[in-house]
Figure 1: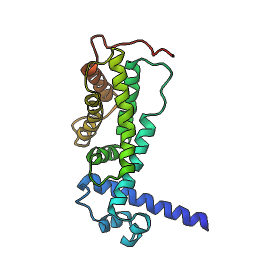
Figure 2: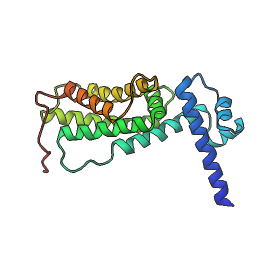
Figure 3: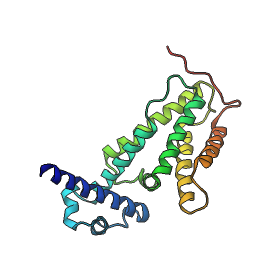
Length: 205
């Protein structure tokens, strides 16, 4: 019986997060009320407050859920000693695969990642990706594979490209498939790479 109750609670929480994702992504945080989320999840309004203190707690739980899923997918360990070009390809492939698999979540994170209502824990989850991406860009510059650009510009280019592809695909302007992702990868690399744009494998010290 205890396991059934626990499973039912998890199901309701998952339904609330799914409903919130649809509504926040479509209408924005301010445009959604708690009763609307409850109706979409098929639960009573009071049930929302059994799992989340308020709407702000709900949007933060949702943001952390998807940001951590994103970080786990994109920032997983890479093969040993790849070149900067190979690492770039791996990161971009992971980013584009996540975007294809989870377009609503990608749009949601793009819309909300600078929102004032995100708490410290949510911002820490966001910084994890930013820190790794920034370090990658700095290393690429040091090794002569990436042009002398502010690392944040490179981060913005890569994230913006993934989010932009999702938006165009949602409107039917293009297909977010492997061919499109590969074409974008080449365009991004040409934008940031030095002439030649290749470096050797990283040496182990």
